[in-house]
Image 1 (cartoon, helix red, strand yellow):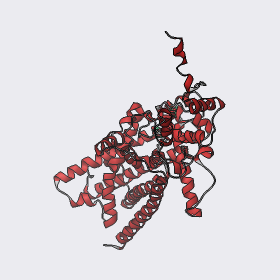
Image 2: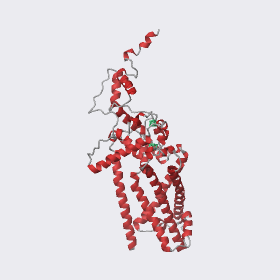
Image 3: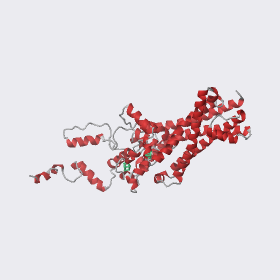
Image 4: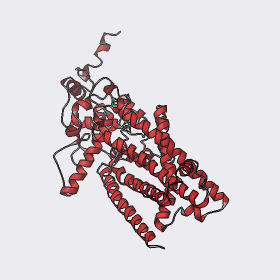
Length: 442
Ligand code: SF4
Ligand code: SF4
């Protein structure tokens, strides 16, 4: 093994090790942040979980409610999965200092044919992805797609989307530099290419260049490809693109209840039971009962996993009747705010220790009463979400806190609440008078 090879292996190990270390730190932080949430039991069978994960995350079933966007997304998704195969050889080459290790090790006709099919498939898919990525950039920047123009997407979320799309274009360019340069070198040495159709054509066009320049192009492509993959790995947990990983656990832990079913609060349920049946004994509760959620600590881990899984696609907001009628509520913003609040707490803990407190809360500092009051609890956001997120679950918890802990509700609502509490009905009549209307009957 030559000196250059040793340097390459060391550089490869240093890059992979550094990227892996940084990414692990951030993934661990996200895991801890999700665990800030309260326990929630999701009582489903393994079959139900796997079915949801396969259909919705792996099979992209709900994406196809918008066919054109789904097809574009499918190209990028399949391309992302398939290009990982080529990455296996890149990693093996990086670890051993070799060049196209798989191609040269398994030189039987069957393996060579499979190898050619795979690389050609990757290249065609990469080219298609290049054009799809440009369409995605145009959709974000030029086309008038209402859900991408909402206020919550301004600033970092807009840049985040473009950064990843830029990564994709750069990555594909490096793939063709690597394979094109390598094909040209192969043509110079053997009089023919590997048999790659697209990069082979590129190699033919480049084969007149000096060998040193071709080797340089190939190496830039190889290291560039590797660097983009590692950069993506490090960037992923800071980005909405984390959904490429979290969509799987999030759909795996889909709640089994029918959409629209809202969990009762045990304390209230017992109160109502005792109103209906005076013999009912309200069970004793331990500690102070808190209604709803004020901050991320009061939400469940599933709510917090939802927030990190959100792709910011805005399908929920586009379907939200409150948003459509000009109200301030955007279910996408609810998810983004929840994630931002977790990140803020996590940053504070890193800087000031685990007991960090900043006197801020999700309710009030991030999400306002005006937004929460606008929700009709129609469930359209839950129905539309391609990765089974429930913004409504967070809205209901925050609204419960707003009303039952902070007593912050419009005066008109307060009358109804007072009647419910005193008369067990929304009207201003005593329960004893409820059957009075029957007195006029024969
Ligand atoms: S449940 Fe609320 S947030 Fe969701 S779509 Fe309906 S009104 Fe909008
Ligand atoms: S909650 Fe779901 S539908 Fe709404 S922006 Fe996030 S991923 Fe999209």
